Image (cartoon, rainbow, N blue to C red; front, side, top):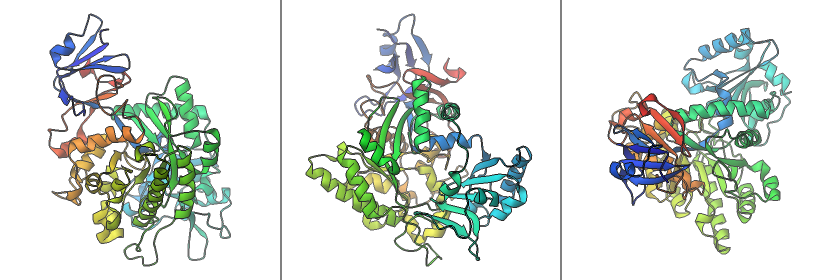
Length: 536
């Protein structure tokens, strides 16, 4: 049968070792039917085939964000953008929203980072001054901290007598009064009383958000939000509106229900499937709650926070693995990563005793932001997936230098992990950072921000990757992490026709121009989800 589309006169990087780079592709139905020269693909076309002249443009397999919070990303598109370099500007935006919002209603926002301001944590009193009659809830860029006003604390019944929840901390002033900052699980004290959108409303937000994802070349994502996100994704799937391939990871608090239902990693279809069990070992760098072997620089008593200890992790992981569920473990600080590796090493021994090879349980560590030198080789030795976010390195580099000092040499160490044999799967952690994978590729290749900061060689330049290595982490690496490498990750005949067309060849251009590359076309399953006039 002839193809529906013939893409010719291109620079097509299939990422398949046998095929290599080709001029042309044929797409029939939802799959790639052939790859080869212009003449070979033209010979397959008939009068009904749409022939697209790529004019030498670059084609890549569709990119997958291996770690994002898609519900949160969708929601933040309707909220205040608190990611401003001035605290005063954020307060002005809250005041502007309050003026247009009935008294007593909630005002939400996301993206603030105290290190962009004066380094001090903000207070409820500052929000009270601009929105005394509204309930204000602003999540930090890291999503590991929230800034709320006094009315929000009252709504949640958080006061001086409130105890810190397990795995969290209520920020307090010198008198013990809640200050307005909530850390880790303490965020839930307030978020639990925020009115929730219906599943239909959330699905509509996510449907709009996936259009933004297509525009930057994403054809899939691995989601780390909770039950409400799963319900909305299922609604989109049942209505035929889900146009991203989603791997849905499950929070550990639902482990009992997951095992009772007999769910397994990989259950689902090519659009929506089950991933692993997500566990938090620690917090994050921004609020200085990442769990550390030695204290933070200039904070002799601060070792961060342990959200889940080794014994708890092993109990959950052992049960999950025995029931065919993989683990996906959030670990940022060097202690959190060390403890996670100890547990996963023990888990690998249990699996080996059952005759299960490592590829059967594709366990992941999410972020892997800082490792102790003794642990550099362990992810590769255990055949674990290093699920990392390159854009974190360039966003966090000065904060890492300030709070981790010389230890930052082992932070965001993609080259070290790749050389040690770990599988890299790259993502964004959106809405923590930009969901645009091209910006992540730029960060991985240059270790610089778009403006060239911090200088000619980048931050710890020995950790830079080649363009191909970075692209593979967004394609093959993400596909392998999800047991989807037989369907996705390369542009081979028989695989799903998920591909993107870029306006420039990021393999050949100046590396500092990579971040400016635009996506002219995004195809998912043989259907153009977005397509510029240049591809008509």
